[in-house]
Length: 308
Image (cartoon, rainbow, N blue to C red; front, side, top):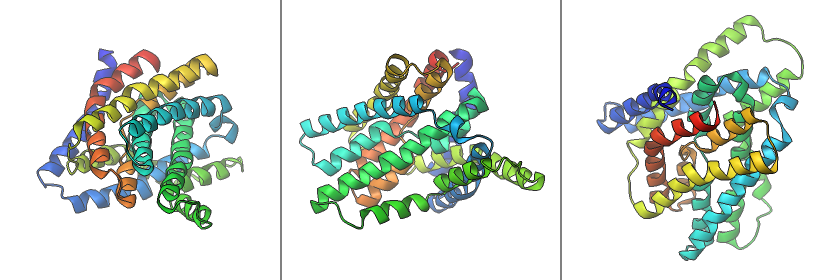
């Protein structure tokens, strides 16, 4: 475990550097926003396109892996909903807390860190997790919040969800990469070199952006945020692991990658959704901050135990 901790330390050190830069205002909030845009729209998209272009749909979509992750995530999602309802929180708030409990920072932290630590063989499983998070759970949250606020499913909702997916560069990059892979053609060397060069900026850029954005988060409502962080860092990987190993008998390496992906801290895009819907913003912000800080210790342990 110590060896894995030492391997993950540089990743968290870059996050810490970004946090320091944001906290001291050496890197102001406006700069963080533009760096995040660069990583989101360009560097990370280039990396995801390159990974997707080198694999087939059969390699990417393993039904047992998808079902194991989905079932484990839904179990924790349902538990988080139940706990929120027990505290007499309304449906929209309960759904946002459930989102916090299952959506990890797969794009900005999982893809760059886990692929480098576990090898490119892990890429297909991580991309599948990212796709499920972006498509299934983002859609589920939108439907629940709309239902809670309007009391019905708007006829315009499918168009809104579809446009949201089309505007997400990570989804577009993955789809275009898979479409290219079906041609069986190799990328023209200058194009491949361009994507590799641009994608190489994703890892340090994403990690620095995570840290800088955390500097603007506040640790409020600690009891709820602590519970949600526990759900994300402990219950989520446990549920996914049980589903993968016991129910669907996923091969050991893929099961380990699934567990590691589920052990990632809460994703920053959940905070964006919380702001967009104006729901539980302080709770979500605190959970992101706490889970990211605690994952310095928990994530290496999970990787060492299950994903090596």
